[in-house]
Image (cartoon, rainbow, N blue to C red; front, side, top):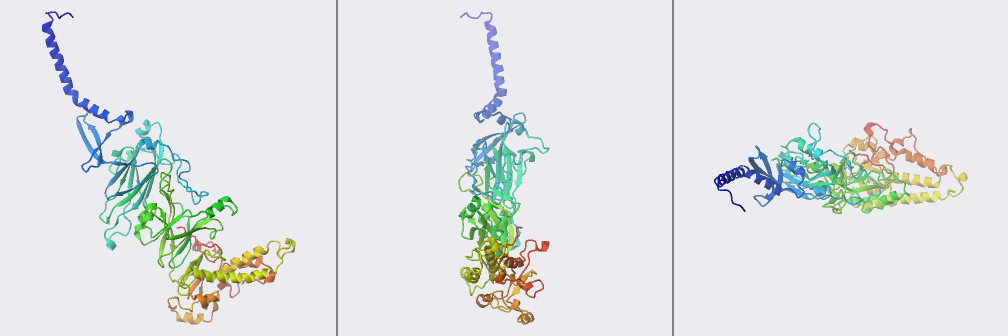
Length: 626
């Protein structure tokens, strides 16, 4: 290699020194920014997603002071010269179709995340969320459960699509639900508030730092729980963040316990507020009988009808609670909340209890399949809520695993203690209502049921012998009627006989005009008597007041004063029309002295009688659904 010319050597050294000084100055000025760029690049995901570069922050995990994972949110201001960080609590990961309980202190916010890979993960297998019901039943399993059936995600205040949606190539519908399982209790007793504690609030978005009451509304969706339930449908293209905020109040003490369910298949928790789908059949002073509406209108020979009737155990459950007990009010739309707070709970911790006896039946509200509920241990003369529910599929990761709850309905128990509910009788199978009773003479419902059922069956046997004398097997042209036959006669007589032999009982204190006072001269089972001595003296000469329709009731049961829901007059008319005239059946006419005290009429359609039973007939039930 040739050496530099001696003339050039004096110039080389100054040039090299100048170049070195320029390089030193360059690294001195830009070294800080190059270091920040390296740090940012080191925490980006492997694919170096361009959306992450456009986000206003980049996340990294670290250790909090108490060893708890925290998220450091790195933010740049002032051209990159001012760097600061703040900490957010760790976001708990939520899997698809799984909800776990979390304790949440008052005033605290808890964060959850539904990860991008779960958003775009596989749907649950077909049928995995099925309840196994033969048909739809009371109402669709999910409401608004179709793709795109909810609110869009992150719309700005003026309705324009957010920049996140503009960047996204596709979205997937995510169903987010919340159930309050536990809530704080009144800290001040009778001097404190009488209602339930404040409700939780849920915030949803795709940026954890944008969630919360103090954050702009256009960066999140907000929903306040109502009676322990909240739901929201979100169109997601990446990670979904959820924040649950607990209110802070000094009037209540204790923690909230919450389940947050997220699913790409269907809502994990559900609430149906359109109708109660639960009907009040009857009550006595300590128990009640309720039933669902008809679960199918198919005829009895159809496979769907038979499948409903054969379900064991029946699918639905019930929760009941006194209306003056405030604890249930804050969670009456939450399945796990009802399990924890309801006085009568069909399930607890996911397992069926023995508080409620339930069967499938085709009695009351028509001859179609329905589920009937009977429960005891109620307080006399009290108002209750009844809430129907459907447990979720117990299989892990099944859609709808959090259960479904229906709107509550109201019912009231009787007060006098001398009426008792009977149902599922062997002969009079249509009887499902309260009858005159006495806990002293008949301490068990089984013995009382046998007394009434045997009396009706014995009377029917005499009728059956008389019916055998009628030529029922000859051709139609030779029978007693061209439109009715002996089968019609037997069915009409049985319905009439059970109704008059087993009267329907109500409290004597009831004032409904269609109720007939009975047995007013006898003492109540607790030995007390009616106080109106003039009325009692006058009643001694009036048979329908001083006795029951069935004399054996006064002689053996001895219920004391009660009021009867009279049999419907059309049942008597049907008996006369269906049986041979030779049997001599007759019905009292409107001008007859015994007409008003023997039979009642169907509701007249007026608003004052809406939902009432003004006379007793097979399958009669109170229709109280609000």
